[in-house]
Image (cartoon, rainbow, N blue to C red; front, side, top):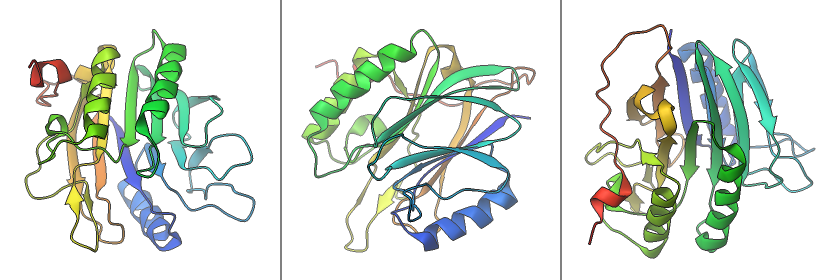
Amino acid sequence: MNINLLQYNCRKSTAVWDDLRKRGELADFDIIATQEPPVDRTKQVLSITGSITIQPSGQQRPLVGIHISEELDAVKIDVGREWCIVAHISGRGRKFVLINAYLAPSEDIEPKLADLGEVLGRCRPADVVLCMDANARSDAWHSRIRNARGRALEAFLDTHSMTIINVDTGDMTTFAGESGCSGNIDITAASGLIFPKIANWRLEDWYVSDHKAILFEIIAKYTRTTRTQPGNRIKKLDEG
């Protein structure tokens, strides 16, 4: 059985969270990486039945969380940042590091990417899967426009040999706000030998959040399959 992952921005909403929890129990996700999850009065990310919850340490409100099935082994790697959480995960014949990050649109992306580069350096030489609400736009992840944040993120991904997993989903974008603003601002990327084992990346509209649910799988080691996920290396898309 493959490892099923969900990447989702909950907008700090308990209504979104309640819907996610119900869907998670039905869909049997193995790993759920949430950005802007709701928290309780003690600033703890809300839990999901049957999973282990990992969140950033510290006094600030966590902006990310990872929920991991008890069937998998997970070790938290504390990086001391409320917007980033890292876990070393193993199970079903696979070992990889999962990084979940949220880069707020109101903050300069360059310092955050520098910090994230240090985090990646600490994770090497492990294979890495990166889930991120980057609030950045680029045709590298099929956005119709390309902004400065997107160019900075492109350079970062190329420097660290990260390959984009996002596929072109046409008019369905990862974000669609009530004001009519929409675009692909959430990315999934991977490095190392784990990249060719990622399959079936897709979006689902659950309507309760202005972000789409991002679903994908990591193929179990004992499953034989042919990779159909295309992937985009940034350098090839922007040689000029």
